[in-house]
Length: 467
Image (cartoon, rainbow, N blue to C red):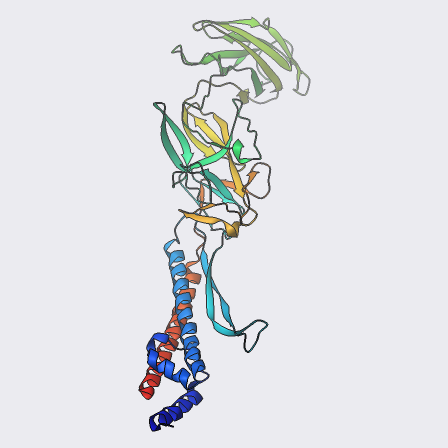
């Protein structure tokens, strides 16, 4: 044997004995002629073993870099409404060695890093001063529609008004911060919502005055709860005055309210009064014929009349009223005459002011006449496998084949969801937990870097011994 080859052979044996079981090496650190000479001398396994030594360390560096990135994302979004935390998890990576184990995997080759977003983790619900904000309790989402007509799911309920010009008319819709339309089911003229079961039943929720009407309604019923003092002298009167609505609206420039009065006068008998119904100027009471006898029993409970229909004809503007009046709450006790409750229906014409929500998902329009009306109901949605939703940015997700189709839920009839008005679901990020993970990930990254550096130094030693 050539003396130089003999020396090389002896050195290679020593090197083989000392580093045969060290995991891996970077190929680029070994010159191609040296590797070919090692293989010529029968040492191909040595170079391959060094390759696996580097592979495990590099995989660790990549994995922990990915984990630090996801932790940074979580921390950066710790105040993002509706944000769901992302987590990097690891699993061992095996490679096939058919020579030693023909039936399966046998050699560890580092680890694999995978990132998961936990959409089932809800953030804390906090109060909001914005009455257009809402939070959804339960493992589900608001369903929205983007500008391309695609459905997107979100837990971010920081809604706002979106102004859209349609045919020269400005319309206002309920939208989220991404600009997507919030979808739901519209109410009919009476404020009744009929939820659908498929996506085609959903509509953007319009909240502008042009789409929300609150027409004037005449007073048709009234309830009186009052006491007439049984010590009132004969011939003395007690008057209950109230306003009612004639239902004419404000188009004529005249307010809807009209005044009527119920005048009770004490009779000669202890438990008897007379009632006269009077209307303001411009109004004529056509029924009942008055004065009308009102009687009580010895305990002060009303005997007659328990119910009374009052008909009035109005002028300027012309209108008629028919008011069913309930007197069951009228008594005669030994205490001062007083009106405790006077309830009546009807309202003047109202102008839209803003919207609010109820716990069952109803969108309620409020008007300047202190009335309100249900105009729509927000829909809730979910999918069979939320982990397989596709993130599209701005805390929104799309359904995929793996996640399953979007399923709709009526918040008013399901126990899976509840809407919290004037509230927001905060980020699911736990800052303390994320910083703890960051410290551990940084330590692991440093250890992996040390391992790669050690293998690099070992490789340089091999190269120097070989040269």
